[in-house]
Amino acid sequence: MRTCLNSCLRTGLVAALCLVALSARAQAPATAPQDLVERGRYLATAGDCVACHTAPQGAAMAGGLAIATPLGAIYSTNITPSKTSGIGNYTLAQFTAALRQGRRADGAYLYPAMPYTAYAKTTDDDMAAMYAYFMHGVAPIDSAPPATQLPFPFSIRASLAVWNALFLDTTPYQPNAQQTPEWNRGAYLVQGLAHCSACHTPRNALMAEDPKRSLGGGEAGPWHAPNISSDTQGGIGGWSEDELVRYMREGHVVGKGSSGGPMAEAVDHSLSRLSEADLHAMAVYLKSTPAIADPAATQPAYSWGQATDQLASIRGVALPQNLGSMTGPQLYDAFCASCHQAQAQGSADGKLPALFHHSTLGRSNTNNLVLSILQGVPRHGRDSIMPAFAHELTDPQISTLSNYLLKEYGNPQARVTKSQVARLRSNAPDNTLVQLARWGMAIAVLIVLLVLGWAIRRAQRRKHAPPR
Image (cartoon, rainbow, N blue to C red):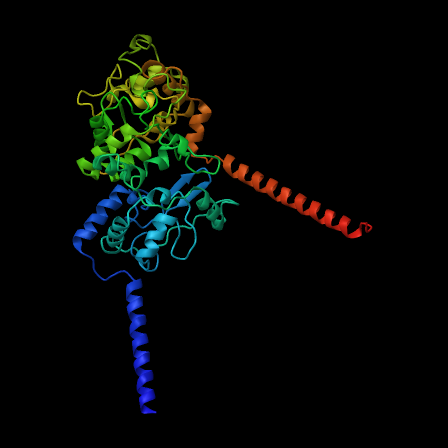
């Protein structure tokens, strides 16, 4: 009896120790090597995690930022190591599943506004380094961001299982043996953590990237993410590798263009903090990508315009009583010339850009021009390049000014309308995709009901048919 009891006690003790060991293995280790944490910090910076997971005036990585999508606002989650509101209870396997498979620890699907389709390229070693950083290099913040409430049918997260089956490749990046280590490093970053294609690739009706037009231009909320393929007319084929590196590091290149909106955030939070070697590797890879032609691009966006002015048309002319009727030259002289100079040549040091030979004014898509006037070009951790004029200029004034700028200094075929300005000012979501999805589901349900009805009627006819 005593021997049996001792045996049971030993068995129970071993089982308890095993459970403790398994539990310890499931949780994040209490410490991590500092060099691993710092490597993870660099990789998380390359992934620009802080930009989406930090709300205005909010704590870093605590979530709560409303990300504009065609379906409505998606609120970013808390990815600090908080055990109540963040990812503090995630295991390495669960962390990897979130970044590679778009699955939360509770098994629910993440919306692909979180670019897990790109993060899936990340290697296991880099996943482990990022996990170490988020568990030991980020301050835990116990605050829960607002829940995402998308309209039906997109509110059904389980439907993303079908989307993932169609469009998600969970295979980590596989180096191309025919290319150099530098090219492969650039491809790894561009395709993976830097997730360039998430914004710069057009999407299909199901909001998945179109692989046949990779990097051929897309949308980032209301902002246009331009073609960054190697095409010489619509893309970056006319940019040198050094110019691409300078743009990613500083956000502007004289004679080519300046960043604004989400791209300025990417520069300030992520790209400018990467090593010169990594930026050059990305430039090498981007210059090698297949050229995606833009039928609307008849010449490079940065090649339009020249130094000129219309001062003669306003000299000695009184402003109209209705300031909404001011002409383009009058608006330019009142709101733009003090920084961009009389002939739009910009400042001598290039920090305030010229408006001719500037990509923003050379594209057929004019959303970025309007948004730059409305919102300005704030820079994070740097001096703002341009103030916002949303509270000073009306929709007709911005339309008039924009069309003047396009005619004098940019692509004269491009246009800005008052309704376009009003839409961008209000940031109203485009409900087209929601309506299409609802109609599609209604048609699918109708087809299913018709098929079922046909099958039932056929079965009934067979049942009552006289024997042959």
